[in-house]
Length: 263
Image (tube, rainbow, N blue to C red; front, side, top):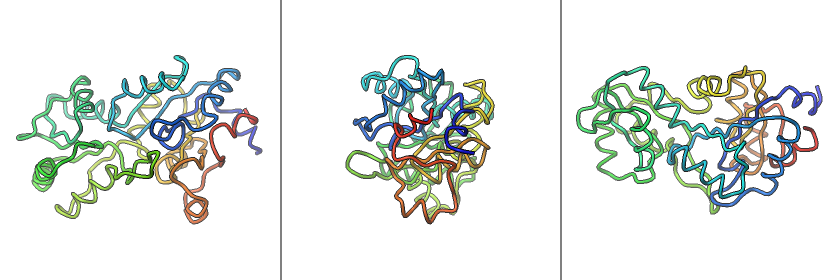
């Protein structure tokens, strides 16, 4: 099947953000042109990000400032998906929440009760305000055997100037101290965020394409759940990484706008 035929079945593109649509505060060239092509061909997109250091409303405002039309300012974060999971799975129970101020506010707004000293379970997000006291409390609760949930697995977060340590580095730190890894990870490439995506869009997996710059999260999501997987080379993945990885995308482009001619 050729590229145009593969893309013809896609009704909604699930777009990663960092490294795919923008880098930090800078739009990747052609990103807005790609959205215009989606509009012209009657397709949708949902921005699907593992980055739980910010709230969905923050990302929507950022997209607005970048010139993204209102019809495309639809965002689902791993933090939102995780909050909805724990509210359903642990009704009335309290979380130890590792998160920065903006994400803590969103979690609470989504109904997650927080008790840092006497929690019933542990929920960790990408905390950009991390300090040693938080890490000590986190390890204490994990070591005590409480249910342990993480929003996503990413090791690094891309920026305009390189990479900063993401939640995967925190998970590795906690494992070194406690011997435990999370009991459940919600974000890409795991099922929690896919189930929430299906609920939000009302579509079938076969009607969506997962587009991103990371093999072990974005592309693995498409591969694992039967969605068209599209790798863009505008972020983390290098040509060498793509060649050596056992995770193979259905399609590869330099950046989003390289897809336009096939839509």
